[in-house]
Image 1: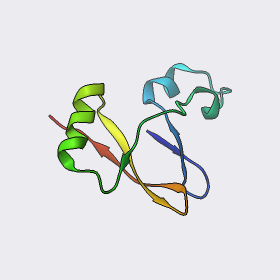
Image 2: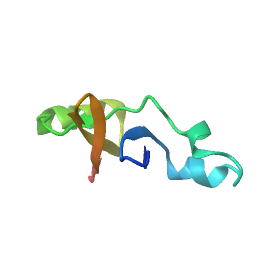
Image 3: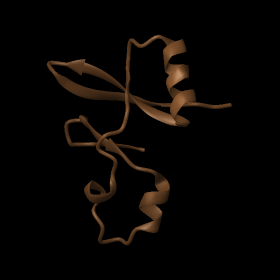
Length: 80
């Protein structure tokens, strides 16, 4: 799942498992992955497929860079 701030900027990603196994007092910011990969909105679909295959990802945030800010557009899911 993607983690965004109040202005919809991508801050990281977190798995549902990480949310479930941690206690309620743990902050998302403390357990999220801040160095997650994302896909530019204009990336070729074959290149996207290679990234999913290479890293074994099932989802990745799709972003667009506007004024040097990463805006998350949606989460791309890979279905077999």
